[in-house]
Amino acid sequence: MTTIRRRHHYRLGGFTFLEIMFVVVIIGILLALVGPRLAGRTQEARITATRTQMHGIEQAIKNYEMDMGTFPRDLEELIDPRSGDEDMWRGPYLDSDTIPKDAWGEAFIYNYPGDHNRRGFDLSSKGPDRQENTDEDITNWTRRD
Image 1 (cartoon, rainbow, N blue to C red):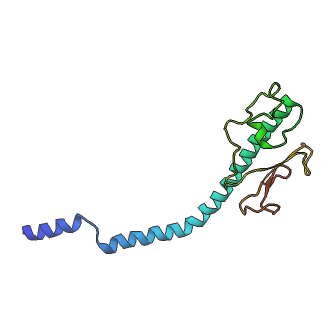
Image 2: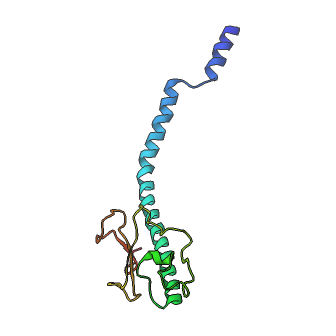
Image 3: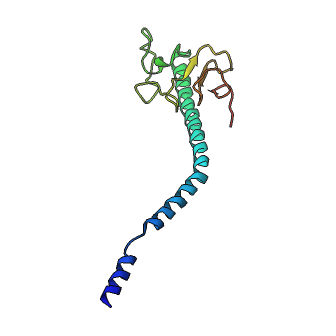
């Protein structure tokens, strides 16, 4: 009788290879169904993060303009004043020592004077495709939600 109990106890103590494979297959099916939905959310999150960064840069540019009376010639002036303007400059206007990059690691494109909007400057990101002047660009002159 003890041999039967031992076998029975041993069998209850672990999982068989077939049971483990069954669980792995179920997890694989769930990932196949849910994975594509999560991938789309990642791209949306990057676009939102880039828009948020752009908004922060826009605010820094506006603060610079209030202090200096003109918009910066380039984004570097938000961190370091151009020579001769140190007495009016109240920066740095950004929290970091470097100009932030978009969610894909690309530099923002700044143009002053701007060609596209009434704000006086254009600020854009190349977006997910990392190509300039495409439909995927994220800009401060058009807002797509």
